[in-house]
Image (cartoon, rainbow, N blue to C red; front, side, top):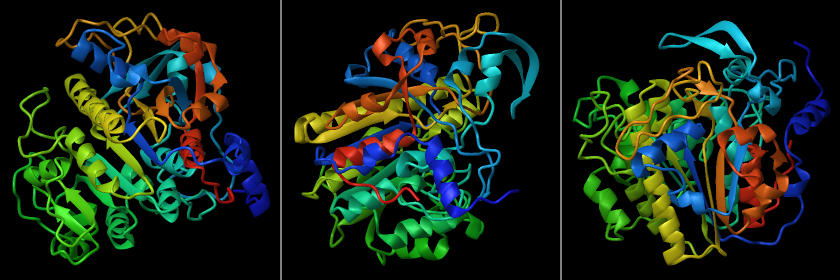
Length: 482
């Protein structure tokens, strides 16, 4: 492949990003705190399905009352799994192509089986999609990069992420997830690596850097996917927690962090009653190797594992700890198993995971209104990409037809069109100090009227603009985009 000079590469990368100058200029400090909540892999109909099941209608979630309701593009720089050091084969994105209703006679081969193409727009959405690592890097660092990268550039260089900016400016950092705490999305706000699959190295960096005040998620080496005790078979069992040596030091109290794992301790932290002893930082590893709930036996919703905290409890606990910093904080909350349910085309558990995420959003909003204010705190609710291309039951004949509401407590009628990620325009909700930044950089797209949203919401930002909105809200000037 043709190699570019460093200067040309930087210029080319800048061209595919939203204007950097907006974030580069000095900005007055606006937000003391930023809370970013990410429902991983949630296209718009994931949000709708959960609302139909929970409320029997749309418009009743806490984020439905936010001031900013837009969409975001999520495409990566390229679909390589390693740095290419070239702009060749970069992904291009044209939002208007999403809505192309020309019929096609094609088949998409997924992991679960074959999916008919139906429409050109569907084909477009199933092509050149981001993985969660590149998406997390875009959200956290403001840079497009190759799939597989954790804050690592296509030019093979480390990228600075929002957590580092926050901590450098005296703020606390919190990162929590319903999947392993070294997984792609949480790693994007905590670490750097050329590959998302280097879980042990990422976990080691998370613990040994001491960057975050609180980290929570799953990946426990001594429990299985059903929350049952098990004996680790080999060192691979410790990969999500930094490797055996790091894990042993963590649980022995020989790192910067207090470690907790029982549901009782997570609840105590949420209630402000956990004894931190001589520690000011915490890692919480729930007693599950995979996810809080999704990977338990069976495929139906309900009958939850009783030894797992929910994401809302973890959110309240994290806020109790990081809010002790008088300079404020950056908190990222991920509903990570929403994505896993979409990969499985499992509608009951997709809805279950999205509702769990929505409860976490409610916990964050309640914290703002009780302990802070919307003048001090910015809350952004979004996803990193779509997954499953979930549409209505008639969407094989009527492109982008709505899923069908069956009322509260009943599963809506749907049709899946893939079992992997998509490059849909995905929802973004924002409220609080600095939220208007997103409106100021949004671009119109009339095709979004397909989703029956008002004209002011028929606009989209890029996922890199989430980083810039956070930085702008804090009043922090970004480092050179190179």
